[in-house]
Length: 155
Image 1 (cartoon, rainbow, N blue to C red):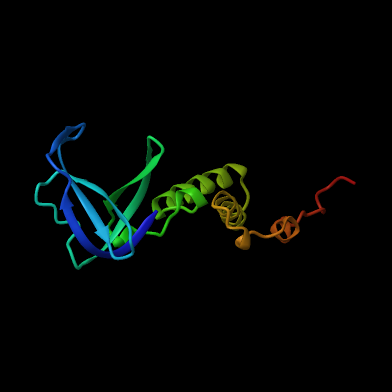
Image 2: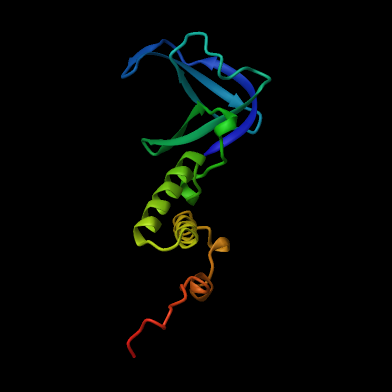
């Protein structure tokens, strides 16, 4: 889940270790909102979390031996969207992927550009569980039928 709070304290988590991405330096970070977790940095002099400064971070729970531990990862606030994986809300990156996929599916169904866009929005809302934005089936299909010209019909 993405959160924002002021950094209250930072402590070293001990000796660096070799991870899959090279040497990592661990830090325990505590925030004013009560969150705390471990941050792994590739730099011994990490600058992502600074005491007294506001930070936007992903707060990621991990289960180990029946206990929950948290990892914190800095997030650029420009791209941050509050998220909660357990509740099903999405990040801006997830939402972008969902919207692109919904547009592709709607385009494959065909129709006028307005119909494709309306279908794409309906698909994206459904995937993101935005029930308050979803129209009823009758509302959804109202006005989507193109006029059929019957002058050319043989009967």
